[in-house]
Length: 368
Image 1 (cartoon, one colour):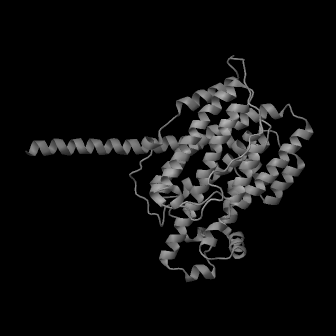
Image 2: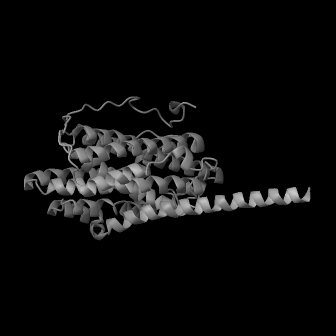
Image 3: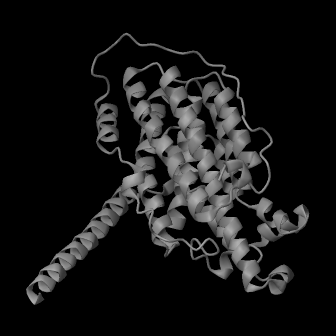
């Protein structure tokens, strides 16, 4: 079925055009470059994979409970609207929430693909161009996978959220070459990683767990790339230039925080926008979810050297300041390990099944 037939509402612009303001930069220096970045590039090449083969698409998904979401995690839980809902209504609500979440993942991955291509075009260093080229392929794979999950397993899509689109537009319109790094690698990807991780670690459904674990394995490299490149560059900037970037981060973080309410879903269930916003703000689960979502962004921002007083105060106001002490390297290492462990468990189980089939065939032959 065509994608436009699956949208809950038609996107405002079928083809969104963002004017390009930056310069394409070529480097004629073909030296080896930075060892750490080239090592990351090598890892990016080594870790390429095919989403059509690595993921078990034969696994069934109940579209009315795709993630095993508990009642308490629904923003309507405990409200008069929830009390009136039938089990069928609650299944529809779970379907719509999952569609909304994974639709934003899908749109974000397409944005990441475009930003990675922009980095290839605009970054001055060849070693960074090399790595960004591998990331562009990664993001294409992620968009393919999320699109397939929504089409084949959920059968429903939501348009891009206004706040996500606004941040993506701001990132792409800026002529400074470091802004796609900052907007995408640090903010959008950092927040997406935390969202992926929370679902990966709580769902008991094997297909979404596979998808999120394998995507996160790639994303861990992407965030490492952004940290590496920006940490080097921001050491050279003036205080005024650093403040400009801090203002961008502050505005972006508020946009991303406000993106997470899923008000569009409640509106589709006939709840007025003001009331939907109120229900979302009162949800204890959403408050915890929001806080955890900044666990990747805040330490990354601090690590690259953007840690002025105004930015710190913004994080205090959001209730996420303490996240700056999180061990980002440990989180990224865990993302790698979880994906590798999942592969090992899956392939071990498949090998056991094959051995059992061979043994059964041999026994059947002996009987005959």
